[in-house]
Picture 1 (tube, helix red, strand yellow):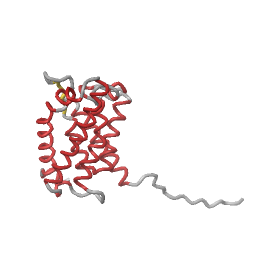
Picture 2 (spheres, one colour):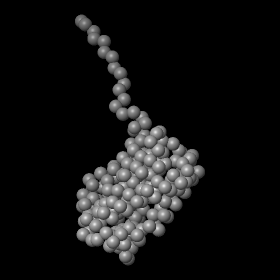
Picture 3 (cartoon, helix red, strand yellow):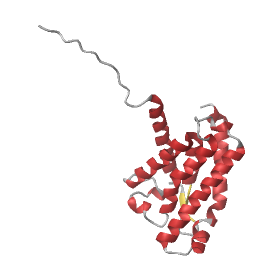
Picture 4 (cartoon, helix red, strand yellow):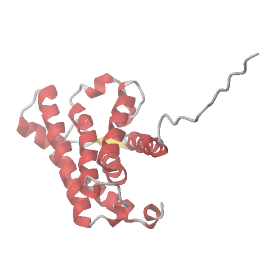
Length: 196
């Protein structure tokens, strides 16, 4: 009787760091989906006001450009396949093709912009150590990305002019974006976030 000696080795299919980053990306995608439930329509526009952009800012600030982008991409995929994570619990491909779809499509690159401003292209760092100018500048640039794509989508799908789109789908939200940016700064700079 011949005995075969077999050797087994543990094979890591995905590294621990990747698993951790994916978990954090999923967490921020879920947080953005939860923020979408804070939704109401202003009297001057059909575009809903939500807290989703705060989720975009936070994902970029805490996850960096690559994983911030991945997190918001995961958010879009979840909504596309039916998870009720869009404004007011909306879901499905219709949300990604409607008049406000440009805003949704802007979220991954906007999170990447914030992440790039806060972390640069190297290794991730503690976001609370980023200068206030970098943090606010990143969120301002991300807001430009969100408004540019959102307004363009509103013009194309809503069949309105650029001026009308700006007046109804962008300008009424500027004060709210400033408040969301301030909230993001407060969260990033808080003792609880720094202690993580």
